[in-house]
Length: 482
Image (cartoon, rainbow, N blue to C red; front, side):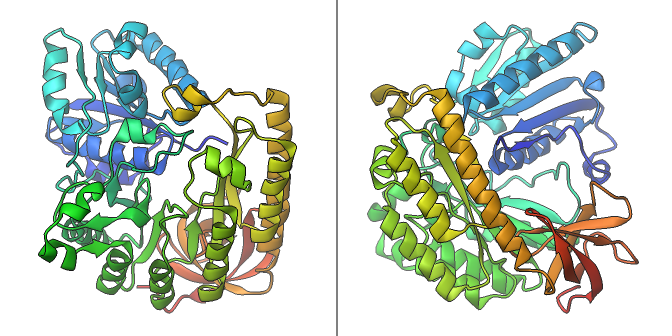
């Protein structure tokens, strides 16, 4: 299940971000995680100051950028196919320039320019401020590349252009990079070491969004629970900080508390958490504030202690269960979701059964499940043979997905005949007579439009459901609507 976000399909609010004086056109697509989507908004902002407005039409573009993902081979193959499409368009628009951004750019570096003759520039996740210089090189007829990883860059001073915006929800990036060296993951190599953004710049961005009538933000990072601001610098260097820096440092629970207090009517979500770093004070802060949504995405990857050790996941099955028990004790109405990998190297049938039993214990609301995909340069690729046959991987994944569907159905059915608060985000895909929105627990709910509008917080009585969607009728605006 690849999570793909495509900024080429942008909404009406995009026009409001464009500048009348800009004459050049930028077409940008993003694939992979939410961080890539957030980064594309930063790129659009930087290029807006260089005379580029975004366009929804590929054929009209002066500059085409694709923000890439390297987490799985399938994601990289998708990018290769998109480049073939760009090449076909470029034959009729030879002045169009094409650039590759993000994790795939960082991983392949100059190799991209050699393999994909259509590509004019390659830019890594920490080098977006260098885009004006790189574009100048391209205009002079040279290929351009900058994939140098930074120890300081957080883009905290860049005000993102909100791409594909519904005018209601937005991402706010709080950390970059990752220090967890999971053996299957390329992120530490493509995005560098963990560093956190100044909390005041985060609050300023939320202030701007609230002033523009946004109703919900998601605090975003590869590992949000590792957030630690002590005046700047890498998280790994915190031990070298001064006594004053340590005394005034802000961790993730502190940041959550600051944001919730400053904007009590703004819904707040966060993603993604790592089990080893999610502390009790974060859960207690969630319980203290009504506007912090009651949903935690908590990737587990495997239910087997042996496989968790092979993955270099710094938590055991038992420690994970303790964390789940604490979440359910402190936040009984909290939804929990997962990431799981089927068929990791050396995985036995017993390891797989351990994963299924973990699913039975937790009973997640929903999840993202994949077969193992070997990534070049990772420790798993270097040290472990990808020895689980593809048919076995697929069979195990199917069993995991089926178990999750059963649990998702149980979770949605529990909402029947209850009233939930829903933030209206868009029109339902299946009916133009219905609105679609999400509950605090991140469940999708649909209901008749009546006189409500996008951005309203509505109380909805649930009368029916599928395994993934709540169906109901609005019974009035929420007391939190403003």
